[in-house]
Length: 127
Image 1 (spheres, rainbow, N blue to C red):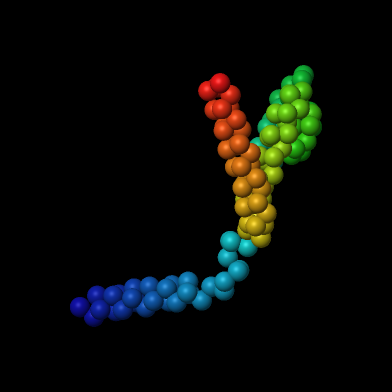
Image 2: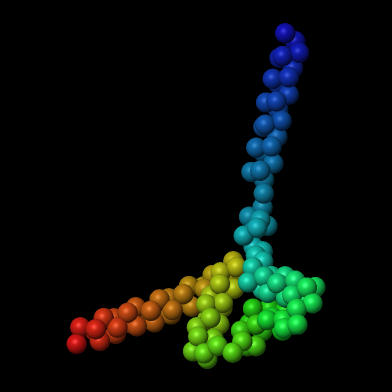
């Protein structure tokens, strides 16, 4: 009986200690102030190294170390490159909590452009 009471008290004390420790976190010191990893850049790095290790005669990544370099090396339509570059910038801004204002501005700009394009397409189809 004494062992059960001691074990229960120990569990309660441990739970309370953990709860107090979690409450004492300083605001701004958590993960909200750190820029997250850019997965597009990491994918380019990893896939580029995979093709290099595989001794591919033609490496489609051409030594690019990030997504923007890969876009510049590609031979796609310049308009598509521009669109992908803008999407990358929005994605990159979303990873940094300190740049949320810039993200909102960039996102609103792209949303307005998409709405205008949709409206123009609808009007052209109705004619």
